[in-house]
Amino acid sequence: MRNLVRRWGLSSHGSVGNWWEWAGPAGWPGQCLLCRQWCRGRWCAACRERFAAADVWRCATCGLALPVPTHADPNTPLERKRNATTARPRCGKCLVHAPPLAHCVAALDYAFPWDHWLQALKFHARLEVLPLLGELLGGALARAHLQWPQLPPPDLVLPIPLSTERLRERGFNQSLEIARHLPTQRQYRLCAHTLVRVRHTGRQSDLPLVDRRGNLRAAFGVVRPVQGLRVALVDDVMTSGATLFEAAATLHEAGALAVQAWVVARTP
Ligand SMILES: [Zn+2]
Ligand SMILES: [Zn+2]
Image (cartoon, rainbow, N blue to C red; front, side, top):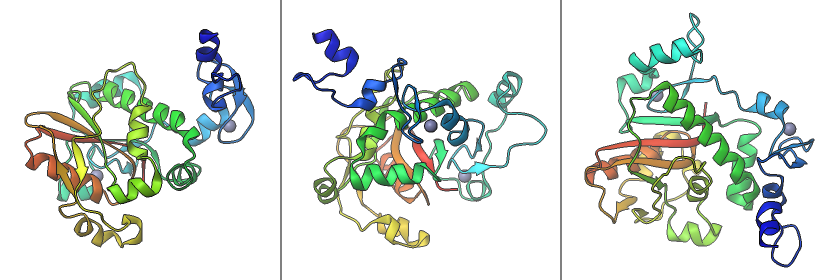
């Protein structure tokens, strides 16, 4: 019975637990989370092709989508090898003012249907999308590893924390939950108690872009040692980058060796 509970997602009192997990990547039939067509796994092949283009060329330090170089397909093995040894692409803004991030991996553009799902996750606790977001971010990390194998893996993975007030209001930290749903092939050392919010701030989305970094000044604190460690920050959405840049600056002040960012969606 215990095997049935684990394999079929049956809860201990016999009913189906979370049917999205029940559909699972192992190939059990279920409905696609995005279009509701019957398929195997969490989403169908058509939605995968339509909504999760893996060949987006992004700025290496802020994840902004860049025009793909027309001379070559960056995803061919030859180009991957070539790009591994040449300078990583940067957007104009990052070339002028380098952000405090050693690297940034973004899985998707913040656009339909992901904008809907990320808001549904945050404001309506639609937790069933988490395995899919974890899969997408995990895929982007695997591609980044192939493209830039010289990038050292992080010693510590830290979700962007919420203030106590926001956590009480929402009931969960979406960044921590996304980090928990990353594929388990790689052994990440995830810690939700190293980087903390020491100051409650207004919603970033309520502010103009130019005011966002100021709103976060001294919002974070580091309460466990990060001296000499490479750190990866996990967040759901990156818009101006103010949250991640402020968190990265705080970690650098605490002695972190390098900080990279892993985000599900980047505002185009
Ligand atoms: Zn679909
Ligand atoms: Zn950039």
